[in-house]
Image (tube, rainbow, N blue to C red; front, side, top):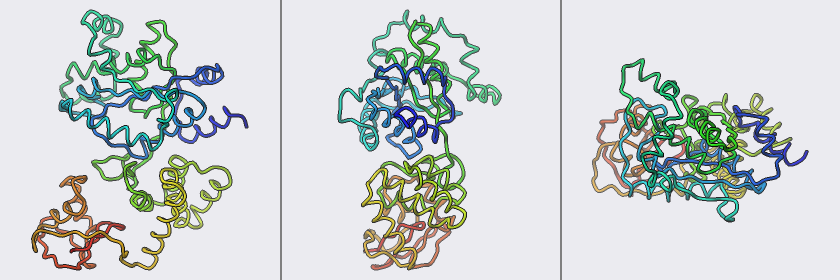
Length: 397
């Protein structure tokens, strides 16, 4: 199997559609270094393994000598892509955008290569939009019709619901599309929710006499709860910023029905190892799930860390023991609300709504006694063990 055949085989596991396959094959066989557009609006500095599917595909192309153009949408972040949103997004201050950029880059470094300048280029779309004069912007608008813009599915939903569509939201696809022309992009790898915007990129490239970018859309899997796609607000995700232990534990919580899909989409296991893991799903799903969790954790943290987490998981859950190395938390009062105690332990990553749902769903106990009322006030004593979910413990100090 040659390099391109190997690439196609790897991409088949995570690809949904290609626009177009013939253009993609021609680009790969051209012998030129491809420019791969990776555009992000930094509304929040957060990436999960679902986002990383696209990053790993780009990383494979980097390893073949192609260049990722990491486009920071610092201008468009101030607008916010209306994808999936029924309400106007709040404007994010520039200071917050800059902080988010730094956090975003740190997470992207877990996958993408930042070690060679010819393999990664960092750009900002404020480079052209901060200096664009009104006649030039009007020229962009003159090329696209109102009917084309409002055909976007979320705008159609708003029209049906009688909800407002603000003009800057309507024009967002124009801005994202023009980015592709400014970057001279050959390829972009995206979730299917970004297809409309990136097709606008092909549209503007064609209008301005540039070769049109290839668009690869990737598969979106259910979150770890088996429901909607991974989301921080739903808490059903595995974050790139999670520790190896949290990654492993969250992956072990998925329904058995998702094991095969997760190993194919989120791991790099191939050949006989992949076949064996998939065959185990029916005969021994618990073992198959542990192998899947080990493989995904290994991809981000290495073999040693992944094996250590598997051993810790087996020791803790097989023996049903409280781990010895759990963190200690010291409340400033002997009585406090259960949600306040959880926030003290978990920090500010979780919203009040998430914490209340966690309690209501029976995911919190103190010394083995479940607490299901999020309004409950608890008395805490030194040495008590607070358990949160299936794999997180704290000892009261």
